[in-house]
Length: 280
Ligand SMILES: [Zn+2]
Image (cartoon, rainbow, N blue to C red; front, top):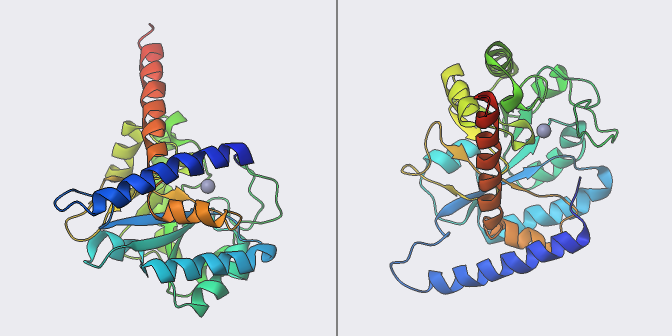
């Protein structure tokens, strides 16, 4: 469920404080800052009514820095700030609306595909009931090379709830699916709901994924000495409806404080699960 306006305003206020702190720190020589890191954006649906707003957000990114592919962000040197754009769920509006806006600006993006749910409306838990369907294999195959393909599992499940065989099927099955759909040499996986555990991450690396993407809004360390294979990588959820200040703060990495809470919550949940499993 989207945040209420009040909750969004609180996040903007707190993120503005962090942004201001970053500005001060960046002027002190020798202090590490968020500058030099890359911010990966996570979009879902871009309906026609949001075309202009989405275009304005892309213009803002181009004005602020460089938009690169995930692979380039992680491995190639470059001047900050750098951004990468991702779309989860592979919805039709990516091809119908977003693609033309990206192409008009010469921008690249990555789409994370639930490979066992193609050519149908999303039916997984939490799907918002909009009429935006998952693309068909034909549509995915017709995407230009500027759109890279990654895995979003087969059936958009919470991976941390699965046992060995089911987990292996979701991970290895979707990996072979995205290879068939034309994924590049590096294999990217985005966890549905951002749900993962250390066991899930280990299984994903064992299945052959190189890069694991969460929804924890922290910047990635970009460039050749940055985050590497098997690292849990952050993305910040954005929407064409975001207020301009909200979008600006997210692209500045100023929402990263929320990742601290998400990490704490996940650790607590896995501690509870371990206690339950040991019969305590
Ligand atoms: Zn998803």
